[in-house]
Image (tube, rainbow over all chains, first blue to last red; front, side, top):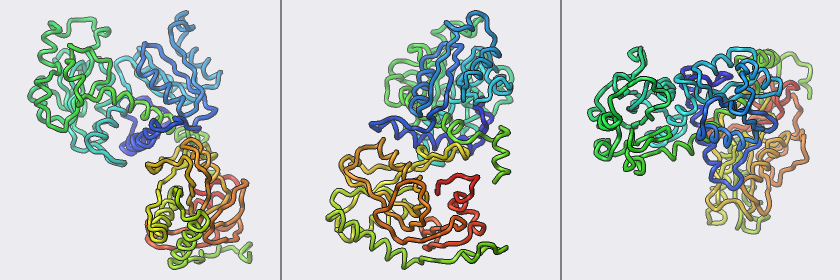
Length: 325
Length: 207
């Protein structure tokens, strides 16, 4: 494993399986009376959120606390960032305070990568979503949820499983992170979206593209609905919302076309009536709530693997330890 | 030790063979039944990796002796180790607590080699988070001495006085294809974690 988690493209198959297997073990913890492990005692984790988030931030915070880390929440609102402080100065401040890891969400794509490559911070950088780029822990928890339903067991991957991702691929960091990770794990990914909501250069991604949801449904093991991100839409990407839901929305009739074992996933927040109807969202085949629970396990696994052991591979300190042995 | 200054390290020699190990497991099972008055409330917990195999054998033997199924589980102590920061993060093993839980039970921890005692300290910490047993006891196949904490075993297969230069290797058919306990100079057993534990620069916990 690398020292940072910025993109799922950095993860090898072994890394990804290690995270999923570790998360599977840590998931047991939620059934215990004492839901806490002493593993990260004395380590400081900063949640640096420049963009609004409830689910991801809470999920990270629960994971950090369950591993006994000291948690510092730093949100852009009400901090010196709103007074005009740069990312660099914020990072230097956090470094001076002794942060062992920074969980960062930023509206600019590439901000976590900048932080990881710089020498502003010595701790691990965990990307909690940057612009329209990546959201690696979301992809990991999606893969974890799929594996539990489609090919359960430690060490198993998603070889040959067909995953269909529907909706606003253009603005979706979840889609980007998922396509890399799912391909690494052996799954076949198909994107379904209106042409206006597909990014330029998608033909170079390791995936298929379709504009016809109904044709893809019978060949799908896991269907992932994406939210239409109105806050990032500064142009008319489709004529009306009604037309979008009719062509690309998930409803009861479409759900019946899915194979018996297929699951319907949603990274949240769901817009009911837009990309998914209440009938589908509330059906037992929809894993949206389960995905949230799995998110805590996955984030614990990532934090443990990045922070729990000795300083990791690409830091100079490990090399000296290895030569000493 | 006569081998102290020899340029070539002594090859490992066998101290227990397959039948010895079977005999030892049988004796410990009888001791448990005797001391726990029929082993009514006993829960066996094997510590990864070889403690799990030993616990399974002990479980089978106890079932023969008492005619009842004794609850059997496994315990992974990785997250509770005191040397986590000395090595890159390790993969976790499976912890399985029997459905009846451990509250009010007599928990017997099972491990292969008792050395520094740090693994057992970690296991006791782990138990603390899982429940509140009536009592905790420890069964080990080999006690090789060199304790670094005030911990002792209640059931010992064999006391094996060793020097820190030596490495104890337990091989069990479940994971190594053959049942044997070997003692050799640690240079010979670079695969053994006990060997690393004897190094001053390396972690002290036997795995």
